[in-house]
Amino acid sequence: MFEFRKSVFALALAAGIGGVAGALPAPVAAQTIKAVMHSDVKILDPIWTTAYIQRNFGYMVWDTLFAMDEKFEVKPQMVEKYDVSADKLTWTFTLRDGLVWSDGKPVTSEDCIASIKRWAAKDSMGQKMMASVASLDKVDDKTFKMKMKEPYGLVLQSLGKPSSNVPFMMPKKTAETDPNTQIKVEDVIGSGPFVFVANEWKPGEKVVFTKNTKYKPRSEAPSGLAGGKVVKVDRVEWIAMPDPQTQIAALQNGEIDMIEQPSTDLLPLLTKDKNVKLVEFNPLGNQYVMRFNQAFKPFDNAKIRHAVMVAFGQEDFLKATIGNPKYYKVCKPVFICGTPLASEEGMKDVLNQNAAKAKELLKEAGYDGTPVVLLQSTDLQVLTNLAPVAKSQLEAAGFKVDMQSSDWQSVVARRAKKDPIDKGGWNLMLTSWVAADILNPVMAGFFNASCDKAMFGWPCDPEIEKMRDAFSKESDPAKQKQIAIDLQKYWVDHPTHVNLGQWYQPAVQRTSLDGMLTAPVPVFWNMTKKK
Image (cartoon, helix red, strand yellow):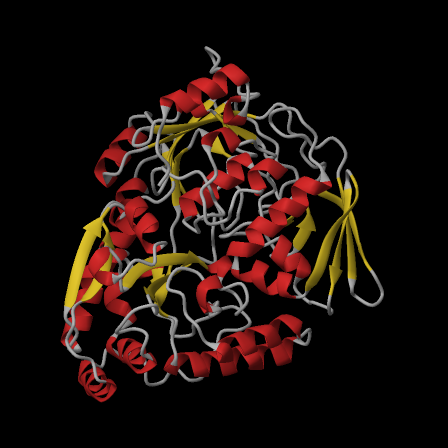
């Protein structure tokens, strides 16, 4: 986790660099949106981690080459035009005129090449794409080419993916940071619609952004994460306020303008207040997931992982966290229900909360009763109750469970470390994916089974990788669906994670706010605030 150093901020202020460059001081009559987000910001690097608060931070500060609109179609964003050769082996990208960093320097093709490489080293889709890339070459300051070893069908979908990890464009110096090392605060130099005000950042209190006056929006109307990112307020403050009741009181008193993830049990109360409104900005919703750490026993054993899938039932998790069935859905398919790749095939005998069968499987697999370390996040209402339910269902199946509790950002930092279990490591952790992140086997980061190159949990399964490769190179939707079904059927017996149901989360705002876009990410451009 990044250490907060006032001396660094002082240097940044003196040099006029980093997040402070171009930042507007808060005018006396500045239009300011005050929002409570789902988590505090203690890490600034959306490539180092997939945590959604860092992704949200990324969209404030950086822009992307392509972006997905509200119809899930990929559109140019920083790119003005692109071309692909007849043999599908050369992609040429030309940047828009007038793109500059928040420190005033022009955005160049070399910046973008370095950014793509750093993102691709960490991201599931990026790794698959780069496996088919022969080279990334500068043509001139605004143009670069991507030369392929073989045709690859998901180039635009990769560069325009909407959520973690997002291929944000950063200056070459920042992008040359080792992808396994967090970027420094002075290197938060943006290409996006807002500027991070580093000297006002107080972890545990607030994060401040101001309108980036150097940013040049596209001319098209905004749609999803694409189109013109026009900022219509002067300033956005993310206020740290973990208690749900305190959040609601602050909203109703006009002390804040928005809550990203209000407690679902308080939503009926909010609907009675004429000064607030619910906003369904992400209609596809989210999926709860438990992740195995396959680097250590016992979950290096596929049979023991399968036993967990047999032991678990989704509804207890959903009731404990969301409660209101209006905002959740039991869904066995690993690819989101209601989307093209969703299928029940292979799922009949799992996720039925069959403790007796799971006990038999554990005995057959040779589980020796060693306690498994289960991480619990305590400060995010939508996650906190997942771990106790997991503990209960695991123990019913015969596991011994050591549940260890901490705040979410500590979980994020801990899960990234491959430490032995007895030296601060972990066996199981629970999280949630935005549905738009997991629509196919290449997008879905937890299907990445490329050993040390995989996400935390580090699964290593050549058969899964073979099917993901086949999906990425197939253009026929019917054949893609069959590959996804075959993968799901194999994955049930060799799981990398367990899907725990779908859930939906409206934001709540005061009626003075307007213009929130329909997107898998809460974004603040296009939003207005009445005085």
